[in-house]
Amino acid sequence: MSKSIFPWLLTIGVLTCSLASSQEIHLDLEDSHSEVFVSGDEGYQCFRIPAIVKATNGDLLAFAEGRKQGCSDTGDIDLVMKRSNDGGLTWGPLKVIWDDGENTCGNPAPVVDEQTGFINLLSTWNLGEDRESEIIDETSTDTRRIYLLQTKDYGKTWTAPSEITNMVKKPEWTWYATGPGSGIQLERGTYAGRLIVACDHIEAKTKMYFSHIIYSDDNGTNWHLGGSSPADQVNECEVAELSDGRLMINMRNYDRTQKTRQIAYSHNGGISWERQHHDSSLIEPICQASLHRHGKYLLFSNPASTEARVNMTLRLSPDNGNNWSSTVSLNKERPAAYSDLVTIGDELIGCLFETGLENPYQFIVFQRVRLSTSPAD
Image 1 (cartoon, rainbow, N blue to C red):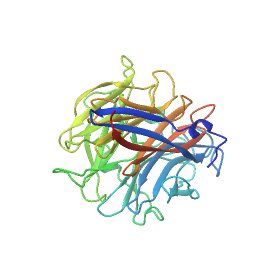
Image 2 (image 1 turned 135 degrees about the horizontal axis):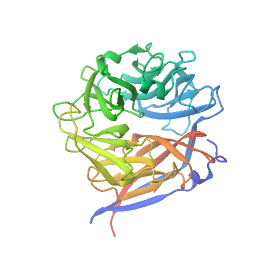
Image 3 (image 1 turned 90 degrees about the vertical axis):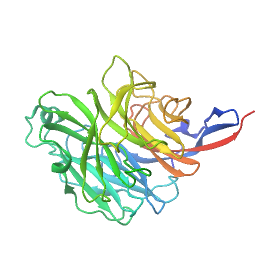
Image 4 (image 1 turned 180 degrees about the horizontal axis):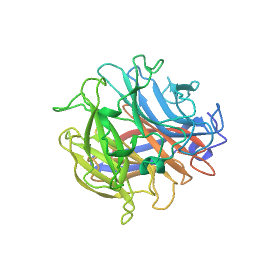
């Protein structure tokens, strides 16, 4: 852990919010943090696009894109990973999971199968020479393809990437992205056990962009295309299972009439979505964000600004996202971009996020946050 690069993370932040007349919840930033990926180190000019899960053996696995030539979304990009076996206090060496020469292997979207202990890692691929705009315009040499990698030993070894494009991408779609961020496994109701990964796509004819999900009902062997957002102008997204069994999808928003996130709900395990609307509490500068259920609470992280990627903020809702009254800044309003949340223990969560002193892409850091309750005065 370095204490010189991010001194603002060393100050313990405390937020208190009354949930009821009998108790309050506190979000306490722990005075330890870790710089997991440092741009310019370990053979990569830039690390971006964080994702994190907790394996069934208790290890935390942090994923990212290792970008060889700089922070551009195009070019030689590898999927990389680091492991922590002490709850995110320290991290092991860098492990390259997928290196396809000068091509782009990115958008890590891991999901843990609690029934088997296996971890499924969904990812997208394209030729390193093909730019996003060319793929959208169908002038690229190839297109975006979707792949699955799996581990049965908590991330120590991984299967070779297996293409599942035909299972989860329609022929009329051009651009496609898995996640970025972690997926979920449903815990209750008719669809208990289903693995879900949030994705997005662009239609060739209309150039409209939508959020959607893919799912597996056989522990990751086969994947299927679920429902898309009812309206366009949304893309990068994450899904959470609510306490009543519904699903909420939280989406990056390009409709700038309201500079806030958009959300929608599903009653059928992600097969269809409804009630798409803006959440006026969740401001955003157009950026990825993370949605995560921790016990009875819903947690959300993003750069909380309407204009710039700054101020990584964690919010807590006690009522399935109807109210987001608990809020704490994780980096004192400094540059910040993508993030992903993970449960470490009953009263401990972590946020893996992009940040820096001069721009948001200098480091990917891990911040632990403790949740506690106490009687109200």
